[in-house]
Image (cartoon, rainbow, N blue to C red; front, side, top):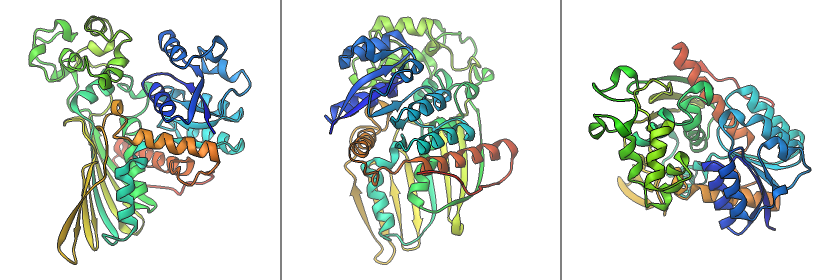
Amino acid sequence: MTVSLAIVGAGARGAAYARIATAQNTATVVAVAEPDPVRRATMAARYGLADDQVFADWRELTARPRLADAAIVATPDRMHADPACALADLGYDLLLEKPLAPTEHEARRIIDAAARNRVLLSVCHVMRYSAYTRSLKRLVDSGRIGDIVSVEHLEPVGWWHHAHSYVRGQWAREAESSSMLLAKSSHDLDWLDHIIGRPLRRVSSFGGLYHFRPENKPEGAGQRCVDCPVERSCAYSAVRIYQRFLGDPVYERWPLGVLTDDITAHGIDQALREGPYGTCVYSGGNDALDHQVVILEYEGGVTASFTVTAFNALDFRKTRLFGTRGSIEGDGRRLLVHDFLTDTSETIDTTTTGNASAADGHGGADDDMLREFLRAVATGDRSRLTSGPQESLRSHLAVWAAEESRHTGTVVTLRTPSNICS
């Protein structure tokens, strides 16, 4: 069975998921809803869509009878609930870009709509589906290192990626999108939940906006990088960051495709002169955190620490797991397993492909997630689709608890999620 898809939101993620799904030869794109006319026309041309398959708004799409088996919802964070609920009411199975929603009320609206209409709901927690994660999960569940006692987990966002997405980009201001922890690192709290496999009990968190502030602006710096007198000495120069990606087909899709539809030297220069991605990172137009630490306590006293920071090279997550019979160190590609009984170590290469960026499909995780979603839609077998409503709401509750802790300076005890439908 070939699964037919409606793409709701044809930005970087929506376009990427459409491309990956159709490349697997198990799906076709039969409708797109996208307010940007260039992106809308690009999708229509790429997938041979007729005028009555192309919509300027999700409301136009949902005003019609169901056109596809499933919908991929990749609208901005604060525009998930309404289209997701309307699509569920029409009987579409749903793949929803994370986060599920910025608030618990909206998240539960989506979950309830999916349950009420008996449609599949999966959230794009792609880290669960990578070859690396599957290998690690098998090791942990096999008892290879005994019981997990504690975990250290690091997300290296990357200096230029943070400047692109969380200083100059669409997640720069929390009120207009969601917290950096929810927008970026709900992946990680979901992943820890998946690997540790125990209910989360208590959370505390610290973090802030340390560097990307007006008081740190270099003396003599201008408002835009293209005409800034100190641009050449600034690590966050938009000119340096973006011009180096020209000619690379992966990075031309993202991040350059976010800046402009004209992926040429002239087009990039014009975007930096006129658009938000050419502004000084110290302009003060952002409030997203640039570093955060979350401490988690799971049932039975198991603990984990999670650090997310802008100040590093963009790379795969780094994790160390400490068990009663051994330990594992992972870098997103390889797992180093130390056995206490024999005092020997084994390196396992998980055959992860590509790099950690969204442009390259998160090391193959995007492909694997789409494959399992399309399989579930086609067959009705959801057994290998692990990022459903229950799992996603758990991770979001953990994020919201961490943010409550950060704002109040308290340790937050998690209440048991209720009324979650699978």
